[in-house]
Length: 422
Ligand code: SF4
Image 1 (cartoon, protein in one colour):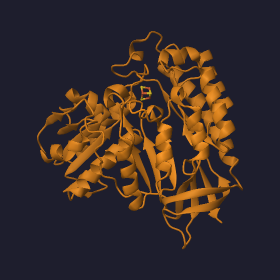
Image 2: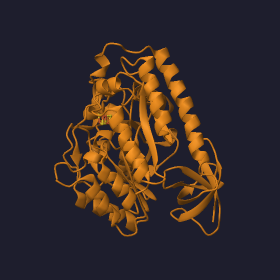
Image 3: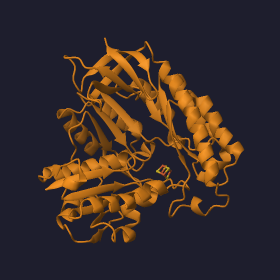
Image 4: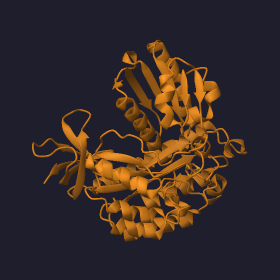
């Protein structure tokens, strides 16, 4: 049996797709790169924005047209919240919390059905991994924050932390199989373990002790819970990389309040300044929403001011879009589409300029790169420095994927760096 998989959305979805692939490969399925060749087509969906959700519907239609015989599985966040619509389009619908039952569900091929369980009842189940140099590790599932624009608490449920023993065991097994770097995943990693009396920083100290592991990354940090202890851990723990992803979403306190983000711009900026002070050469990235209801030109200008002040290495910016279940969808003062677009373009132009300036500062510097593989063109290695920037390198006989090498940066491009191993 052959499967084809397409993933939309965030790293949690990428990890969920990997779990599904692991289950299928363990059960003698073979992966194909063309949907036409597959017996099973899986689409892992994202519900964070309307555009991403619509992609799932059009993709099902497109793939059904290409391959009429295959069983089509819709999974992920849209599957969790919109199964009524999806059961008329896909053959099988798998919710975000039913991946452990995926194989059994899929075995019922050809039977249309809805298989959704709203709760996360097996957080310690260890799902398969594909052999990767960087492995994604779920440390918690769900979110309790209910930001007013966000559908995630409805698609992924309430916060549940996995037990640290299960996490450490999983990481040790992966390191034995060749993993060099782990990315610890959660919607808000800073609130990890709040029911255990054991926090995220404790977990970082524990993971840092795993022998053979070279690097630790994590995402996402909610600014309200981003603590000084975590900043010191980034500085003090050798394996923890000097990069934080700290979504600000807006630079206006009025909008942050409407978003229910539970921090002010000033509190956010103070944390950033402390981070920059304590973690030398630390990089910082963020998420921004433009055109949230009631956002005026002045509010938007405040967001641009934050960009200028923080100088993010990069940012992921989006136009606000109404999401089911959320408070913001019914708010007064929805911003016209053309204003959202104009603001998004302005913000992305400014960020591109800042990113370019930041990348330029790496020219002639020596950085540590973990080689992850061969570039898409097939003529170079690519990897990342500790600050999470992509670095390309010419092939050399004595290096291979998984090696950590010292590299002199020779040129900065728009989104990446070029260097030579020294
Ligand atoms: S913290 Fe807010 S934006 Fe992030 S997943 Fe939770 S509700 Fe969504």
